[in-house]
Amino acid sequence: SAVGARTSQTAARQASSGRLELLTSEMDKGATQVKAMINEEWENDAEAESHYPEFGLEGRNHVLPRAQGVRVAAIENQLLPALLKYGMGGRKYGTAWWQTRLAEYETLTGQRQDNTQEISGTVGDKAPLLTEARDFLGRLDSLVYANTRTRAAYLAERRVLGFLKEYN
Image (cartoon, rainbow, N blue to C red; front, side, top):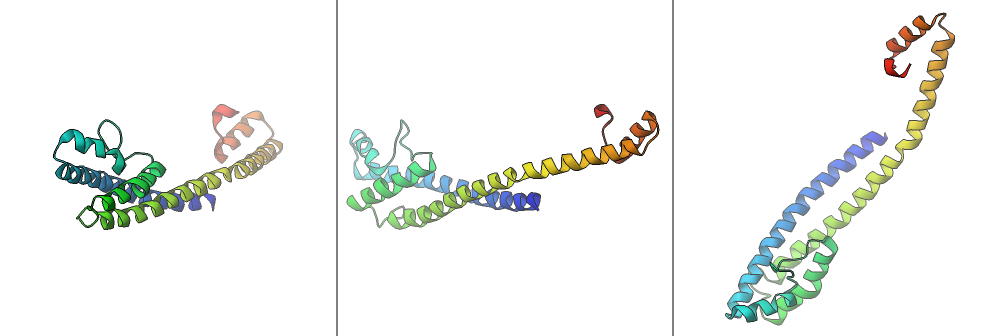
């Protein structure tokens, strides 16, 4: 059913969203460690800060971008090449650490987008069901009206069937 499909898709999305948040948090901690490595390499604070953008760290706080696509591009095109360029690729928070997280992050962001599209499609499918249900209830109401002799009996029968009194 449409409701069951949506429920299973939502559960899958919640699982991937949880893992995605965890990966984002890990990457943020990794970026902090990369900043520490940069500060070790260049002891002059101003010189170290001048290298942050080269590693994909942006903004006043020098962090990875928040947007998923931009974050992936910053890691792939800036952070990983900069780690190799300055000989930091073999360290604990070097290229191997980033590549494993980046691969999973890309997979999860793709799955999340697919799940969102599936959920939207499933929710869109409910419109024909809603029309069909309203048609059925209208026919049922007409049948009840045709089979009762008085308005009071008609209204009582509607309440028994679950029609709300406000809509009489």
